[in-house]
Length: 192
Image (cartoon, rainbow, N blue to C red):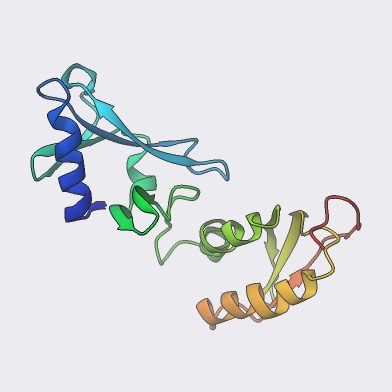
């Protein structure tokens, strides 16, 4: 579920030496499965561990995860990186905003997962997002853009050169095209 690199494990051990005996770390997701999902790590005293928590054993400590966060921390990685700018703990959780779906899930669910986990985080840099409205009988994914993408002068390039290429390469036997159903209105919300 969660990978904690050796560098991060060593960092946690140093931090935990200064805490009460039995203290471990808690890894969690606030607002899991939503665009506003945030991951975090905190100290977890022994008396704060719930019966429903998942305990993961590492070198010198346990990582505790609440039941609600578990499915959203699949493939998560915690690392401790040192470079010329200093040291920092990094937490990458690619499934925090959208729960991973199985390969045999309905096409709508699989496409929505890709949009939420891979495409929307990139669009969020420009204040935008995209939602899957439907998949037609002809295999066309119909999308609705919002936020900074609505009315943006680059939306056609984003759709054809980015989103469509990615989705058609990921679902070659199931999707035939990706189309925009947004009624674009340029304004202050538009990125370009």
